[in-house]
Length: 63
Image (cartoon, rainbow, N blue to C red; front, side):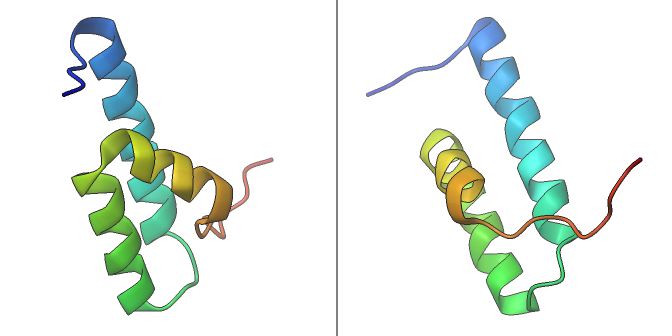
């Protein structure tokens, strides 16, 4: 079992929160948003990596 604590756990938490905010802000359907959020919440590291490669992105662009 992989146990992440300390600074590594904090980094994973910040990255997962960023992924969730981006998923919620995306223009994809509500059902897909729920599935992506569940994936990131249930599998924090693997879910984040899958989202990073194939997930929906936020439609908001900052200049």
